Image (cartoon, rainbow, N blue to C red; front, side):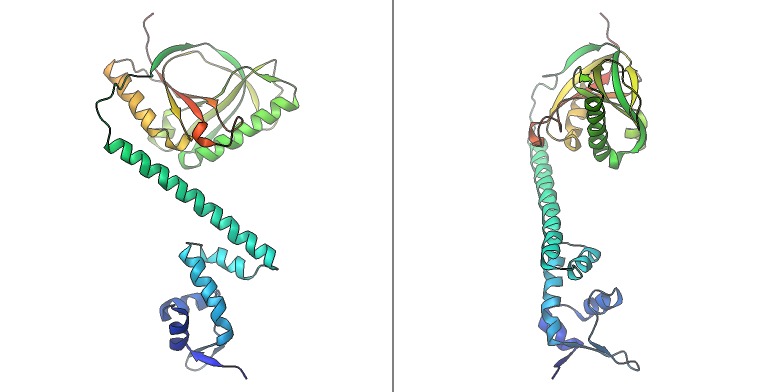
Length: 273
């Protein structure tokens, strides 16, 4: 014999509010076992309590409702576990990102009167043949776009038996910083002519005079290095118009450990020889 619980009793049993249960019914996540067509009165069965408990715990892990629905409707236990594991990996990555942000904030608050010019060099960069991908990108997508473009460039060079001739780099228009959308070019210097294929095309990166600072860590944490470099250029009245440059001395093709990544950031300057 089926045992029914009122929505109030089911709320007490599962520690879900009545409002929450009504919402889950509306979106099809947890439908009552019976709904009175005249009064709208909802009833649940005791067999639904474990499902509600699973939903509650997944929500405590900030899993979106559509992903919870995918977990509940998974065809088998393995698929269900894979979907939960994928969410846990994303949560761990977000936690690690937050911890890095907290550490960076503490460093900023504790910053003293260290030599702000330390580690900054002035460099003349010659024109360089390279394989490149140029597109208009949104700033919020730039990290993912960069990783995909670099992977495509290295795969293309390997397929054409061409050898990289230096670290990969990027050239970024001012609009990316001022309007969060603009033209970006990522390139890999190489020996030999590149045959255009897909998004990849041969280019000659233009020469430039740059003030360069080195950032260690993932690219989405480079704002402090940018700030230090901007202050240096402003103090020495060296700034000129031109796109920013980055050189990925150690990056995704070298190691998966983002703490070991090393990026040289170049600010265009007017340098008197």
